[in-house]
Length: 137
Image 1: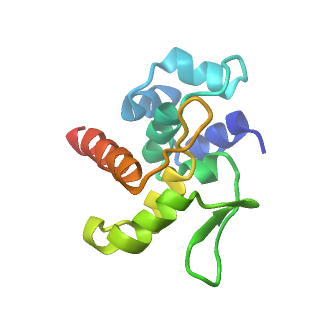
Image 2: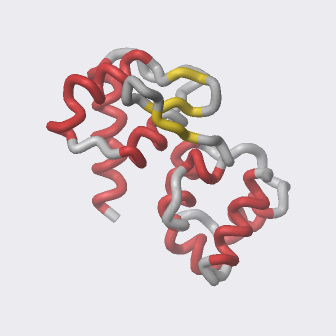
C-alpha cells in the first residue's frame, strides 16, 4: 500500500477529518490533502513522524515496512540491518534512556541527506531532540 493510501486509510479508520488530522499533526490541511492524493512528493522524516504520532502509529507502519525482532534482540527493518551506532546506543544506554520499540522503529527511518547518524552520541542527540520537540507540544 502506498504512503498516501495508508495515511488516508488510517485517518478514516480513526474517524478523523482531514482538518483534525492536520491540526493534530501540525501540518497544513492543504499539504495533508496533497499527500493523500499523491500530489506532494515524499514528506520529510519530521512530517512523517508528526503524522504517524497524530495517527497513533509509527513511521514504519506508515511506510508499510515490516519490523521484526531478531534472535540477538535487535530490530530489523525490512532486510536492512539496524545501523551500528543505533544498536550500540540501545545496548549501552537503552535502559537509562528508556528506549522503547516504537522509538527504535522511528529512529531507523531517520536520515539526513540519505545517511543515518553514525555515532552513539549522534543517535542519542537525535532521540533527545525528537523527544524534546514532541514533549513541548
